[in-house]
Length: 370
Image 1 (spheres, one colour):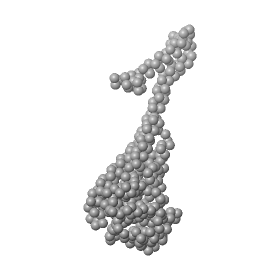
Image 2 (image 1 turned 120 degrees about the horizontal axis):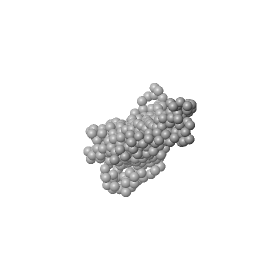
Image 3 (image 1 turned 180 degrees about the horizontal axis):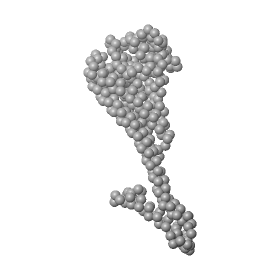
Image 4 (image 1 turned 90 degrees about the vertical axis):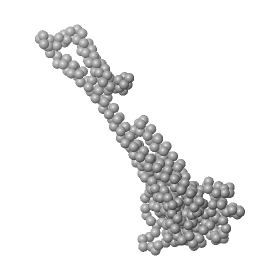
């Protein structure tokens, strides 16, 4: 599976011009135009839903009975965002954080409202995410996403089915359910990273290649970016279930505590995968070094075998005269050439047997252990 590093620097340039007044909304160039959708439900209320509505419809629903969930997909029109903020009394500073990307996951209290920022990951690799801003107020929840598409489909289905925990839970329980859906979306992504790590480990063990090094570096960068998402998310959930926030009921804090436990598991997985990625780099270097040692061992054995053979061939190649008894008598012997070849073969075989008994070959090591 190919891994492409996620470009964190794509958000490096803030859209708000320097010196602008606090609360100024300046959508980023190329941002999608907002699309409004809503869900209204409650005990004894018929479900009202629309995937594409206008501000006039929201004005009629605001302040009504039950729980109203307004979903804004796209941040490209500041006039629409300001109109939604004025309709539900959203603080201008919080709206500015919705538009000025990226923001660190956090939770802030503005009067009777709670403002929460998280990052929602894509379901598959390569790593991609978008900021999701959530406003929890009296009887309503408003979510702002950078673009169309989210992980809230199963939650919408549970609302349509009239699950008692959601229908009777109130707006704070809906806010918890939205955050829980975002937290759960990280687990399939981490499973994909686990598969990538296993594939890389197998490739390194079987055949360490130079092209694996960029993939390892990209993977380490993406895991570092993923840690930037999960670490503040864990702190955010810890603050939501520990701090005394009047808008969040004690019963909902119990669910938030369970969600915090999931975030802790995510953080542990990310840290373990980062350690695995670092160990894979060490494994690659060790595998390359081991292969180099194997090559050098073979070359050394070959050179060592030819050293005595070269010596014998050199001695017989001096061609001394045979009249002296101290010279080579084999030069005038009929089988002298065959004797020299047999001597070389015996020396080579003897050295190979010696190397094998010393355990310099894999077979010799096995035999010695047995």
